[in-house]
Structures are given as C-alpha cells and as structure tokens.
Amino acid sequence: MMMCRRCFGALALWAVMAAVALAAAPYKALIVDGQNAHDWKSTTPVLKRLLEETGLFTVDVATSPPRGADMGGFKPNFAAYDVVVCNYQGDPWPEETKRAFVEYVNSGGGVVVYHFACAAFPDWKEYNEIIGLGGWGRRNEKWGPYVRWRDGKIVRDMTPGRGGGHGPAQEFQLVVREPNHPITRGLPKRFMHVKDELYGWLRGPAKNLTVLATAFAPKEKGGSGEHEPLLFTVRYGKGRVFQNALGHTAEQLKSVAFIVTFQRGAEWAASGKVTQPVPDDFPTAERASVRE
Image 1: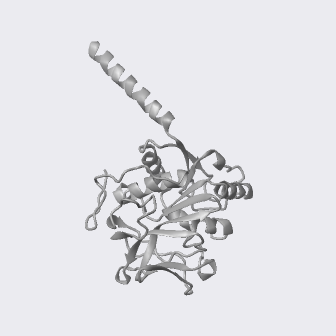
Image 2 (image 1 turned 90 degrees about the vertical axis):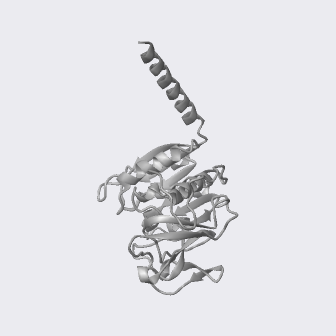
Image 3 (image 1 turned 90 degrees about the horizontal axis):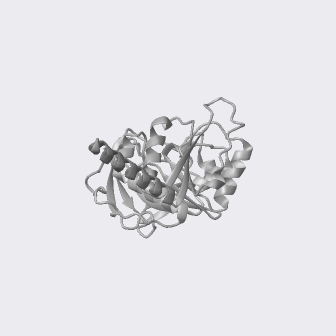
C-alpha cells in the first residue's frame, strides 16, 4: 500500500509540474488543418507535440469541414493566438475568415507555413503575399518570380513556367544563406535532411522575403538544377511569416533538421526572437539525424 501511495504521489507531482509548465508557456499557437492533399491527420499531432515539448507553447487545432462541405461556419479566432501554423490546402475559406486572417497577420500575428500549405489558395492575392512563394494550383510566372541562389546572391528569375514541383524523395543538404537571423543563428553552415520531397520551382510575389537556407535540386534527380529556397521568412505588415518546405509525412517530421527549424521558426514568428539552443543531436554536413 505504501508503494502505491508513493507512486500516486509521484504521478500527482508530475501532473502538477506539467500543468505549471503548460500554464507558464508564453505563447498560444493554433494549427489550422482539415483539408490537404498531404496526410494532415498524421502530421498535425506531431506538429502539436513538437511545439508543446519546447515548453513555449500551448496549442489548439482548428479543423475545417471536409472538402466540398459548407465552409460558412469555419471562423477560427486568429486574433487570440501568437502564431498560426498552416497545415491546410483545400477549399477557399469564407470571406470573413480570409479578412480576419489578413488583419491578424498585418497587425503583427505570426504564421508558420508548413510544407504543402504553400500550395493553398492560389487565387487569394493576400495569401500569396503573406507566404511569399508558393506552388501548384496553376501558379506560373503571373504569380511572380522564381527565387534562386546564384553566384553568392539571391536572384529573382521571371522565366515563364510552372510554380511548384519536385523529383523523387531524396536526402539532401541544406545550406544556411543568412546565418545572422534568429532562426538560423548558431546552426552549422551545412546540414543534412532525411529522404524527403525537395520542393522546387516555387514562385510568388516574394516581397520582403529573406532566404534562410537553400538546397540544391539536381536535374538527374528530377530537380531544377538550382539552389532552391526551403527555409525563408516574409514580413507582411507588422506580421512575421516563416515558411518551412520540409516534412512530407510524419516520418520526415522525425528529422532533427525539421524539428529544430520548425520549433525555432515558430518561436520567431510568435515573438521575433529565438531562445532555444541548438541541440547536440543536430545533423552534420554529412549525416542526417532523427528522433524516434
């Protein structure tokens, strides 16, 4: 009986400590999902856990009606949050919801655009400006330039062509192009990521855009033959936007390259700063790292 009491006491203490940590989390995050050509049902729980394990976030999820259903009642209260994580690609939101989202970002709200959310809302002008670069959804040169890293600098390329694409899943190396940004400060210059979709041919307004890291997409592996921006930020009004093109499925979300850049990017989007240290298991220039 004494042993059971001790176990109960330890569990009670753990519960209290967890509740205190949760209550002390300085930022509120909202993940938006419900429709996506990618498997949002498996990735959203991982994204939620990754944010919560930093101790910096409490996390809610707003799930839309299914594709083709009435979207009229889908009205998340964006203004109640410090950062909105977009894991959505599907039917247009109601006009009221779109206006609320733009006002939220313009007034200083944070946004994290996760992977295929860059393909959402091709015909929504403000969304394209908020995300900076997007793909698919009939996007082409009318949406804006490709953004490339060539000869040590950013080049905006207005060559006509599609927006969005990738070759077969492959391991690839990311190269930090802006080492002084809070998200990338302290990261190694080069680091590996697990086998994943290497997004290419993204294009869009690219206003107030800062490329943080690129990866080379070789033509022999179905890529563009260019250094493609995969981690970048956008300033929209007073808002901070971070786009992370990594993470096709929950399997790729085990990559420490994704985990750390996602967590740091979310903190920056919420606050403008990053307090999280670079972990010891961060990948090297030669080898990816995963957490099971």
